[in-house]
Structures are given as C-alpha cells and as structure tokens.
Amino acid sequence: MAGECILIVEDEKDISNLISHNLKKAGFRVIPAFNGTAALSKAKESLPDLILLDLFLPDLEGTEVYKLFKQNPRTKDVPVIMVTAKGEEVDRIVGLELGADDYITKPFSVRELVLRVKAVLKRTRGEKEEKKEIVKVGNITIDKQGYKAWAGKGMVSLTATEFKLLLELMENPGKVMTRETLLNNVWGYSYEGYARTVDTHIRRLREKLGKAGDSIETVRGIGYCFRES
Ligand code: CA
Image 1 (cartoon, rainbow, N blue to C red):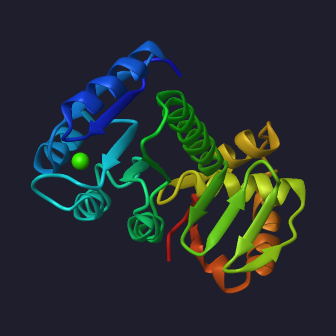
Image 2 (cartoon, rainbow, N blue to C red):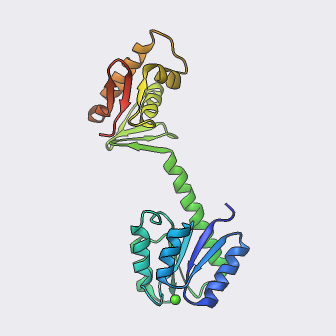
Image 3 (cartoon, helix red, strand yellow):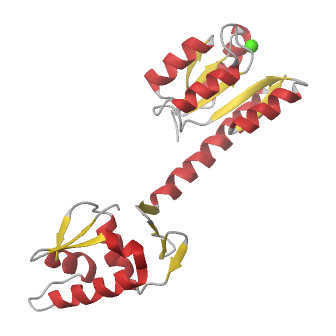
C-alpha cells in the first residue's frame, strides 16, 4: 500500500535523515522524532502504520517508550521494529521478549531496513485481514472462511444453514432479529408459515452450542437476539 506512514524514532540526525530519505524513495511517508517524548506524542497524533524505534534515546529508554506505545489503546496495535547497536545482545533479547515485531542491528544497510519495514507491514496487514474473518462474541467464535464454529474451546459441527443463522445473529449482537429478517438473510426468502423453520433451526443450534447457546435469546412474539453473556 503506497503512502503508509512510518514514525522514525532516532536521535542521531544523520541516521534519521538517511532512513527518511530511503523510506520516502520507497514510497512511504515519514515522521521523524528525535527523542522518546516526541515519539510518544507524534505517535498518538498521527497514528503511524509502523514505528522504527532506536533503543538508545537521550531522554527515555527505548524499551520504556515501547511499553508506553503498547499501553496506549491508540498505538498498541502499531507494529514496532526495534533498532539496536551491534553486539547489544541483551537489548535484542529484551526487545523480542517485550514483543517487538522485528529488530535490526546497527550498522544496517538501508536496503535491508526498507525490506524489513515492508515485510512487517505485509505481515501485520495479513493478520488484520485474518481477524476480519474471525467473529467472536462472548463464548462463541466463528471462522467465516473455514465454516467452523467453537463454543468455548470445543468445535461445534454445524450444518450450512445453522452456520449462516449463527453468523447472522452474531454479526448483529444485541439487535432483535425478526423471523422474517432471519429467513430473508439466511434462507434468502420469507414466506408466511416458514417462521417455524427458524424456530426449529434455533432449537438445534442451541442444543449444539450447549451452555453457550444461552446467548441466543428468544424475544417473544418477535424473534431472536444474540446477547454477549
Ligand atoms: Ca540513539
């Protein structure tokens, strides 16, 4: 994706400029921050797609800055590549233990750095897309791609219709769904008299889900509602 924004946290201006120049050439937007405090405020402000974090900063420890990024809900999901000096094995390990997405040691080739940035962005993009395929409400999890469902940790075997019905309810949590709406959205049609079909399927679905089936609430005279229990 062109124009993704990289926050470069690096106090050495020459290195910062060199990285900026090369990332821009590769089509990225860059924001430089020359110390930890600036990095924290700039990250919150501009919400970068990735952070390059030098561990040796004049004001705060790089690892401290990293922890603060991860504590803030706005920046906690932004991938971080830590930059350490050559031979600082301890920092490399600390960085990975903290959960950084990658690390690179100085002196590095800019070419390698750009490749690492691209690789981490690609990987996190993939993870985000994967997440969209997983719907989790309360105790029930659904894999939309794989047509799989779990109640707690146990996999539940559902028919295609039961699967679609459960998904429809889970994608509208807290909303009362009429039998007619469910028929339209799950079966693709609705006729008078088919309302019983919905009831039958809901009953089977609840049985299969066991305790988690309590999340499907009957709204008397109207339909059903999925509640996060
Ligand atoms: Ca430094």
